[in-house]
Length: 312
Image (cartoon, rainbow, N blue to C red):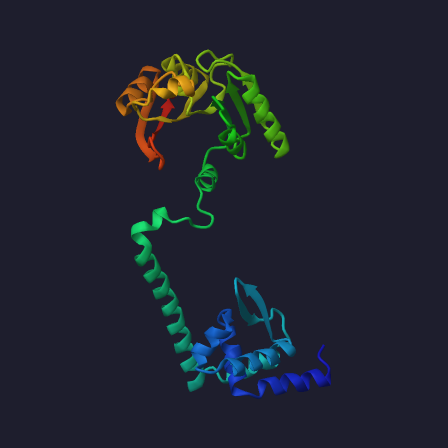
């Protein structure tokens, strides 16, 4: 309840045309001091003084937004008198002019945004932008993936395995290297991830039951495999009917040094070659496409493929 002194101060705050106009605008949306100066065509000191008085009587609050402060109506404020005053003045020429000014401000904001994106469109993909990472994009897209049992064939650094674990009921991580699997388990434990099971195995000869997984993933693993077709057949075998396969690998290239330095067994795969292997392995509806090109020499290209195990 507001005491007599508080009521007097509230009435004094409302007994000013500019403060009523500010309240009317803030009832529409949060605005900065600069926004109010632009709409009301009023100097900063006057606007700041009015805002300070409205804050003092508990009608207006502010919050930091970057380098600016945004002002808005206090939720649940003692505003019965203010609402009554605003309602009576709703059709006034001053309020109508302010609403037109607010619309003009919104139009300018949209035009500023449009002009910015028009200006940077040509080199937008090259700009370092806050929050734009491939890992962030992958995590977002994985939220659309089915919840089920996943098998990750060839875990590498384990980053994808842990990302899969965020959406899967369980992930069986398969790798020929016991040390790779041990590192994955350590990182998973540190992050509190408990639904990853590790299996030391050659991905071309899996000690896994038939039809036990909903999704199989081969990320940059096929080119390390002596028998890539056998690995694809094994992936097909352990998938349930209607299960999905995702393959990420390299487009065929001529960088033979990777065999000695990185233990690659194959210099990538052609699109037609990988599609043929998927069909030979028993998959249906293969989809193969070049997805990305490394920015640094020798500019390896990434191949993305997906396919489905038949339902019969």
